[in-house]
Image (cartoon, rainbow, N blue to C red):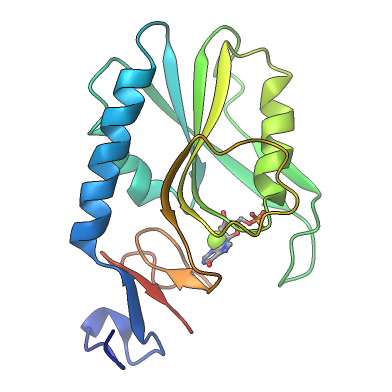
Length: 183
Ligand code: IMP
Ligand code: MG
């Protein structure tokens, strides 16, 4: 698309290609909500957003789910170098949140190496949910480390660094209404 985006939100930073326009995201998120609504006919459904990256996606997605749900959040922290996750991921969650016997839908912004999700799914599955599934807005399909299927994927993403609609680079760009590539 265009070589340089004129957007006062960017403060002259080097974002030069819109990968997904806001309207494109909105229509796909509404489809995902309809799919999820149809797939879970009964039982308690807890939608668990992985912070911080999923916050906008989650907010839009849950408003397209037309069945009773509950919403909660998880924080995953990983200790590693600045650029690669070490795989030593641990989970910060509200200990009052009951997972046992409930359908759990884990909502993630983007699947990259898959390390974070694999580890979180291991930790969540031992808490005996009735079912456990992943919904990711973006999937790069390079995840060698992902040992679980991603049941709902918004978009098959290019192997580029993407920002906006919740996704950050050094905590910047999360508020962009579209998703842009830094490459
Ligand atoms: P993984 O464990 O390698 O799959 O990394 C997943 C996490 O890394 C995501 O939840 C994002 O927070 C972050 N991440 C991976 N790729 C991107 C990207 O292209 N843009 C922004 N964040 C990313
Ligand atoms: Mg991030």
